[in-house]
Length: 487
Image (cartoon, rainbow, N blue to C red; front, side, top):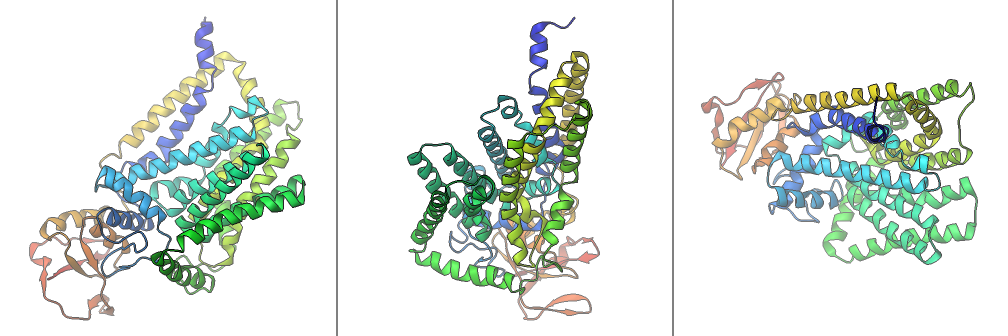
């Protein structure tokens, strides 16, 4: 017979957190434990690494001396934050993995905080914080983006913080409420400093609140103007610095205007609705899980739907906020699935609000059968250990996408003096190769090149030492790289 004390331990919520950990080790940890990243992520890590080592500055980040010697493609805050990690943990690929893990943990913490505050009047719903976390973690775009160091992950911390403060303002005294709103505007500004105008969607919080809940129009307009004013004050202060003004002139021209006009070729799509299609492709697991919860609860409750009218309103509200974060992306044809990352926690919270009555009903009903619940608990623990074992196999390995490139860099770097300039000649030059060399404290050179007999040929003559003499240039992916050292 199972003791009462043991029963209390088993019937706590620990098993659900064990499952969350299992999902983490299954979906996220393998990529965090091996070397190699999505090309954008390794570029951002390289720029941050440069900044930590004195190459470039806050308002003039650099990629290499010859490729984006002044990087105006994105605002610099993420690079500056990540550079602090390189200063603390050193120049190793583990530093960028630690950063990715840190961002993931902070985002998870904010999702939990938001869930608790919006369910503060219902203790049963409030404590199941693992429900929105699971729905968020199981989204494809989430487990792609966070191990790959894309800017949207850091941006999400600031936009979620802004949303959290705005929620706090709804339940606070008038004076405290305005303080939270003002602070929220500061977080919106920090979000803009990560990825630009896509961080402005918290401005829609009070208009959308008015749409769903009605209320005093004058008061909500005043609050909206306050968050905008807070943001503008921060922006005005930053623009007092000449380097900052010069940066934003270049950034607005290079990134925003050209993207809207369709002059940027990277991530260009045929349809402005691509982002909505990416959203639908990313949510089949979370949506399917939610549908199953509702269906099982329907049959478990004698074919009666279990919904909470107040939660339906909350769900609609947070769904609209999530849409305000993702729908404006359709202004430009320049789109990618991971652009959805800032909206995904809010979509997950909205979906969780809709299904939490069904989830809690099923959870309480299931836990009444101690025997089955014990079996479920042991299965959950076994699942965690299996996932840890799967993740552990990746320690010390290299992502197959980057394996040949990283091995190539490792094979050649000891033959080249640090901070050298390299000329590349190849059939298909992949941009991540520049980043991997640069991360090893080289300055990669991208001179004017033309196609000749299917090879890139460097047009200008330079004094070189061919590394072919060392027989260190392997062929991979139908590409043979010829690297030359410029004196």
